[in-house]
Length: 330
Image (tube, rainbow, N blue to C red; front, side, top):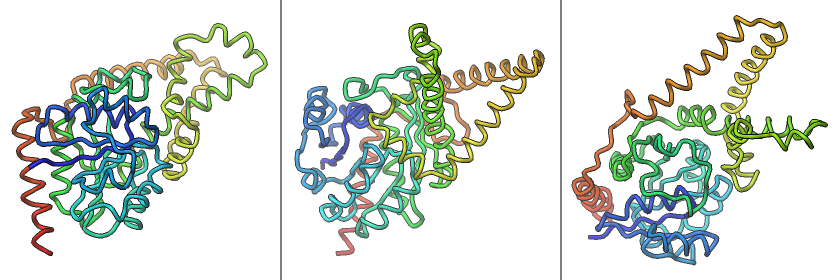
């Protein structure tokens, strides 16, 4: 029996999920995007089997719905699809504010539909790419990467197992967290770098010398400011920061304290302290890059790329446990 996965939002992440699942014969991939041209290109690339223009109809037969869209679009989307989700549907999202999305699901989605939050980190081969959109989607985007997985209290274990199996099919590892921990981690690694890029841009382009400086701004400047390019609209980053406000402010405070320390060392001409500060940073980055390349994380559930076994296990899980249990209740 075929399992339908509906992907709402067919940019880089959504289309990459679809491409990673393309070999699974027991999965039907349905796609929807508010931009029809994006949806068409995603289907042409092989990321989805079918596209639906109408949002509610795209989820009406879905066993799994993946929300792969900017945070500010999720609330309204949940409201639009709420009454069309069949019992037992598992809702997944890839937004950078897990507590916020969980609260929206609890408010808008009827019972017997289950939410599991996903926070994807691409594999090491794609750490340095700045391309976005459907054209940059890759079947192996998440290979040897890691997903944080969290769900509200009371979520059936079958829904979490389902999410884990889906992640394994993409070649990634699973790390279980709660929404509080996930939001703290995302504030440090997802939101802060993008806000830092915005701050650097605003600090430099407002200087009187920018007219000439822009002519020599090169790779270091482009690399550090590339984080802001991950959002097509400023409100996406705005909403991510505000939805995770406490953690974002905490990380901004830590970042500003580190900058102040750096400023003081330079201002005082403290060569030894400055050398130590910079050497520690270089070592920390090299260590992190090496760890990401090896993808050997303590506490993470390893991926299993035996797709036939995983596909069969996922199908059994979906049809024999979660959805089967709901049918017995009727």
